[in-house]
Amino acid sequence: MNYPWHYLLMSSIYILGGIMHFVFPRVYIRIMPGYLPNHKLLVALSGIAEIVLGIGLLSAELKDPAIYGIILMLTIFLSVHFYMLSNEKASAGIPRWILILRIPLQFLLMYWAYWYLQV
Image (cartoon, rainbow, N blue to C red; front, top):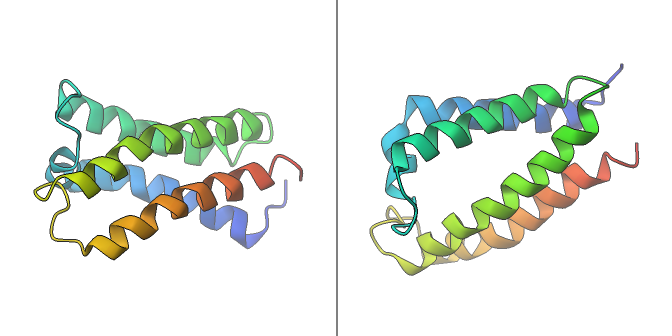
């Protein structure tokens, strides 16, 4: 299958994002909401999910399930974004306006993935 550059970019973003969970796990552990158990495990699982879904986008047979998985994953990740807004330590010194902009960005990323279901 011949993928457009922007589709390959989306796949790369998820693969690289997932790898970063293992390169900088402390960053991800710090932003995990306190009510979630076993932060190290959840960071590893979310990193694996991003990598697997990013790779799945590159398979014609797995493309649609990977897209639905990405949308679900981004929906779940919204809780982290809201937690970062509500907890100064979790915000990691990121300006509040950037944290606020990340929320609509999540929805744009969901739409970006959803758009490829039509293609």
